[in-house]
Structures are given as structure tokens and as C-alpha cells.
Length: 476
Image (cartoon, rainbow, N blue to C red; front, top):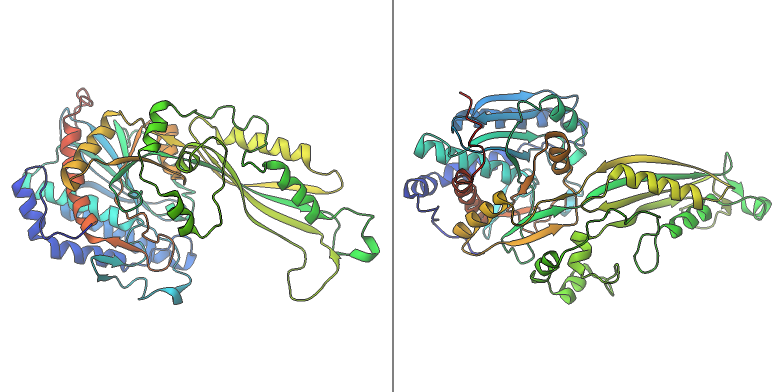
């Protein structure tokens, strides 16, 4: 999408003029936020995460948000702010995150990862897409609305997390302890991207996750394979036997009960998948594999967004150095993840997986299972009023009707909003699908950044027209 010098916003000329006039200052604020190396997973960057939270809190106060607080957690702080003066209008909880991934391997970056560079309509820096762009879009939409109207069309509660890139380990407890403060009609999460070709899209589904480490042990120490081979089992062989039993050659998971609660795809679901313009040959060539693989009876996109999976993410054990070393290793290990879809309970899947491993594991070795994390899937109906409001806002600003997509990955907070706060969620993101998140040379398209701000502003106008929140009133 080419960058344009000016943009229209829902016929609001004052808002459009304000955004055109303040563009330079807005871009500099975005760059300043990107310069903070808020890497949540590296303890040495804890002061940087604090600096990002403090900087964001200061921006939120400046643009007119109220009750701004840098909330302490056992880890990195969560930033909260609200504006609650739209009497009788919906209340929306907005989520983004200010933390970023590590930058390694730094030598593959074309420029320093925390020195943002704009070139050919793209801004390159760590966090430029994931997720500081969305943080800034929401802040600037609020700024423009309050600066030109003196009020927001809806009530907003804003939370910005600092540990999304390191498993959000303290978020659920914070949500639970702040239930009353976070009461809302629905939630908006801005941490998703457009479809292939940078086509505007609304994500309606995310898969959940079960992640384990399987550790298989035999003897106390490695054994000589000549002296003991044939008398004791090999943990590496046993591990491979277990892993091979989990999944068939056709891609179907063989754990009994694994598919029992899967939400089957409806005709509408399958039509929505079929409407997405995916060139499977180009997709295969882009990945670099000789052929695509997956569960029979489903298209590539259906497998990615609407079906569960089981995959080995890593496997190791024994001697891995150069040359020979004839041993029976004392232990072997595998990391295994299951991506889950709507209606699958992560705790239940973990139980089924553990029970099946107990059944197929050889009795000649010992094993243990570590739970490395679980999260539920999320699915918001296409015809949900808040989803349709987002579609209208996106079409008004980007000029095309958005696609409805499901992503194969997970955003754990989405399931947390549903299970802890009882909120349905709209996933409204603007990142480019090939923006190299988590990789060197992460980038964001500046035209999408600018139009995204205008879409968010338009979205709050659309939400204000929805028939929800009329009995809620508003807090002073």
C-alpha cells in the first residue's frame, strides 16, 4: 500500500486536519518509544521496561487520559489508564503491550535495532510492528479525538502489559485482582496483522496452546554401548518411540479424546477460509519445503486457523559432538506443543496427553513431564456487533472491506479476558504479515500506521452507535 500525504477520517474534517498537522510530532514520539530497549525476557533490561512504562504513562496523561497508573507486578509493570465520561455509551477495555523480543542475532540487522530508521515508507526497529506501533496508534487516536472534540465517543479502559513477550506470567493474577476496575462491555486487543499481501483483515480466531517438556531417563550416567547395549533400554530410542506414537503419518493426532471437543467448521467458516486469496504454491515456495503437509480433508488455511495440532519443537540427548562416541545416553528430552482450537480445554488436553504418554512409554525407562504453559483458544463470531463495527471502520479508512482471518498462533490474554473477565474480544491489528516480528529487521509500514490511527478513531464512533452499555452510565 503506497503512503499517502493526507487521510480522511469518517468525514470529520477537524480530526483529519489535526492528524495531518501533527504528523511530524507523532512520528518522533513513535521513534522515541522505539528507542527504549524494553526486552522483557532479559533481566538486565528490567530498567528499560520500567522506563517504557513510565514514558507511556506520561504520554497518556499528556493526551488527556485519567487515572493513569504504573501498576506493580512481581515482574514488569502494567500501565493502566481510563476515560469514563461517555454516559450511556459502551465501555471498552483496550490491550496492547510495550515489551519486545530480544534482538539476536544483532549482526543480521541492517541498522541498530533500537535506532529507528524510515526508508521506502517503512520504519525499521525492534517493536516497530510488535507491538509498539499499536500502542502509539491508540494513544494518537485518543489524542486527536480529545484535542478536536474535547471528549471520547465511548468509555475507554487502557491496559498495556510489559511481559507479553515473556509468557505474561503475572498478567492473569493482576486481571483477577482488578476485576471490578476492568469491567467493560467487550475488549479490543491490538497485537495482530493483516493478511498475505498486506490486505486489511480482522482476526476473529486464535489458537490456544499446551506446551510440555518430556524428559526420559535410564541409567544414572551414560553407559558404554558395547558393554551394556542389548541389556538396557536406550532413553533416546524410548523417547523416539513415545513421540512417534503421538501423531500419525497423515497429520492426525493419535491421543485418545484429543478431538472430542473441537468446534467443527461450519459452512460459513469454510466459506470464509475459501474467500482468502492464498496461493498455496507460492506459500510452499516461500517456506522452502518440497510439499505441504497436514490433516486430510482440510485446506491449508483451515488447518492453520481451525484445526488443532501436535508438534515436536525440539529434541535432544546423547552425544552431539564431532566424531564417534559409543554410548547409551542416560537421558533424552523433547519439547512438544499442541495448538488448540475453540472449545478445547488446555487442562483437559494436558491430562489426555499425559495419560497417553503413560500408556505408550516403555516400562524400561523413567520419564517426567514439565508443563511449560497453557492457554485457551479464542473465537469471535464474524457477525458480532463489535466485529462488524471494526469492519465498517476499516473499510471507511482503508477503502476496502477487510478479510476475516484466523491466526495459527496464540495471544494468551485473549483467553484470559474471556475466562477471568467474561469479555468477548475484537482483534484489531494493523501490522504487515511479513513484518519480521521476532526477527532481525522488524518493520512497520508507515501508511498503515497512519491509517490505523484513523481507523481506531473511526471505530470508537462506530462503537458508540452500538446498542450496548446504555444502562451502564459512566464514572466521573
